[in-house]
Amino acid sequence: MGHVNKTPAGNFRANWRNLAGKQEAKTFGTEREAKAYLAEMESAKNKGTYVSPRAGKTKLSVYVTRWLAGRNDEKTTVARDRAIIRSHITPTWGDVPLGKIDHSDVQAWISKVGQQLSPASVRECGRLLTGILALAVRDRVLAHNPAEGIKLPKRRKTDAHDQTITRSELMTQLLPELPDRYRALVGLAAGTGLRWGECIGLSWDAIDLDRALVNVGRVAVEVAGNVTMKPYPKSKAGRRTVPLPPFVVELLKQHKEQVEPGPDSSIFANEAGGPMRRTTFRASIWRPALVRAGLLGKVVQLDKRAWQGSWKDAQGNEITRKFPNRRVARGAVAKYAQGGLRFHDLRHSYATWLVSDGVPLNHVARVMGHENISTTLDRYTHVINDGEDRVRKTFTDFSLTETDEPGTK
Image (cartoon, rainbow, N blue to C red; front, side):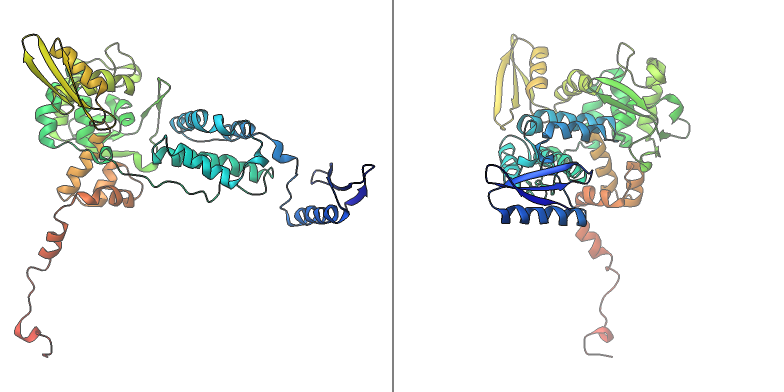
């Protein structure tokens, strides 16, 4: 049991033992305050909510390290979270004692970063800080989580979220402009909806060209420029078999004849025979092909010695520049143009085509590797533009007869 004693300075010290049996003390100006505080400490110990008043002196950076050490997530998720913490959380909160962080300060910080980052990024910052502080609460370093209940901005849907390419644009514009080595990769992604990592992780033993099927299993994981192979997809539903359209079968046959397998028998490798990196592919292969296909920016010839490149910047302003030749103009557009079709948009396009053509949503969910059909419903039912007409057609064979009129029997 704790006790209160008077100090030589005339103050009153509350004394008690914490859960580990170590002596704790805190000084007050009056005996009443000391006794009241001592009663709170004893009550908290009995209720199991006790937190040492000294615990709050621990800096947040210490708990960042502990929280990261306890992660058991995918490498890409951990790498992304580390980058967010390093760039946006540690600079502000790293040296702040946990006990000094309050709800209003966290909310003010969220509002501040909201002026610099997208709503999605702000939500990630809030999620991570809340998780770190939650660990401190579980360790009894904090009595409550000051980040709990903070207001986060809603995710804004931008034009980039719903980009698609038509099948005609894919076949007649994009595929012809890709280097032979990479044409099968893009065709496979568009014709099966496979993710980048699922495509890069494929080996020839996962492809059955005779039966026109691909078995999705091994996945390539890229972290900080290093590509490794993971023997399983991100979820149980990700391990699936997807039918290959005839044009993809043809592209894969050509690829097999022309390109040697990469490391680990990968179907797709870079020109040096090494693992293909997404960032390099995007800059040197994907975006230049979009420009050549007329799907990103615009390049026109002004005269024999001048070409003009046009593109939109981050604010949506139209930028126009002159260049000495077409190659330089295309390179500038590929480098500086904002937005444009992403490789992942091939997956979105694939699902959009299936849903628009009336493929049942449970089949779409299966080939897409969605664990829940609700994911498919949320993302792709908006593409059915003739939904109202389909509902009406359900009743076209039914009409009121004379005996069906209201009031008749």
